[in-house]
Amino acid sequence: MLSFDSYVDDFYCNMNLSTEMPLPAARETILGFFERIQKSYPSMRNFYTRETGDCVLEDDKDLGHQRFMTVEAKRVCSGFRNPPDISTAVAQHLEVLDLLPYMLSVSPLDCEALDFMMGFDMAYRGNHDELVAEALGGCPAIDGLLRVPGARVINYEPSITLTLDETCRIQARLLIETRTTAYHVRRGEYPEENISVYFTLRKYGSLDPGVSFGQTLEILRTRCEELLEELVVEQVLQPLAQAIAAK
Image (cartoon, rainbow, N blue to C red; front, side):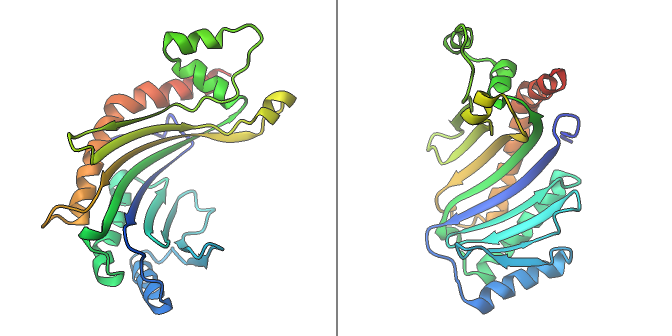
């Protein structure tokens, strides 16, 4: 079982389903869907709409962990911050995917993209970009730039996307997001903010005949965990955590 507690302050396991056609927006349809979710997870008692029209159902934010769900114009998101394990979060995502065809009329044909995403936050008070560059390094050209006399790093957010099949319909993306600005560097004052690492497995396009959303998510989840263990935990999360601890 993958464990991240020794490296990160928070982690989350999310599912995003983007559709080609707009989702139903009728009041009774949306409320019926969220009421059905709440029956399974009674702690999700906070419902509200954003200015964009997105509808949100979530746990209280002060629990240390949080389930959340959104229905947007063409996307459904299911998330769990700091779940006890990945399987608990996946069970929530699978229930949502099972309900979508019946309660929101979402067909596997209507799939624009299905994402399984693991995210990790590490709090750090300092120059995020400088720390990421020092911890993860880069190619010789990048390392040479870091040695320019008097230079300071003000933006360094590595991102790479890989295709995992010949059709390019299954892709993996690693993204590191920093929150240091030029203003912080200029003043030498850094608030404590999160450095975030996102690792996403995405399936593009309509699903194959006879294949369900849940089956597809399980495939993405299995591949995601394999790549996390092989390439992300020790090669990305651990060096960042060690660099933060050393500062």
